[in-house]
Length: 132
View 1 (tube, rainbow, N blue to C red):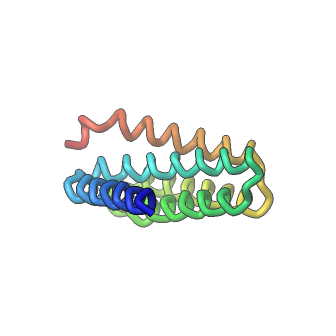
View 2: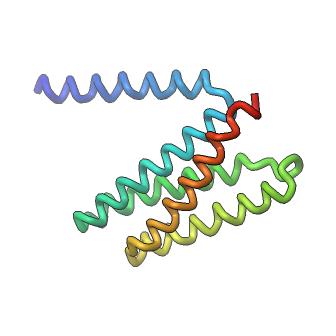
């Protein structure tokens, strides 16, 4: 019984830490956190695929799709112009690939989405000093 309490206490502590980080984060950092969250969930999906755990794969993919939706919603098409439009199309493509994986599996499709998202994340991290 005490172990269950400890587990819930650790989870609560992590949640408070995450919320604190979000509250104090710059817009640039928030986007980076979304990239990190999506990539983390895609790693969970990959591991679930290896273990043939369809339920865990589905949960992880759904969370990654939700994050991609959030990234799309955060785009400013008025200020972003062509870059914003291209990112929107890329996020849509990744969402579609993830939905295909959700229905049919496919590690090669997952690797494609991971590569695209990792590239965006690295590019985003590289411009950190330019957006201050």
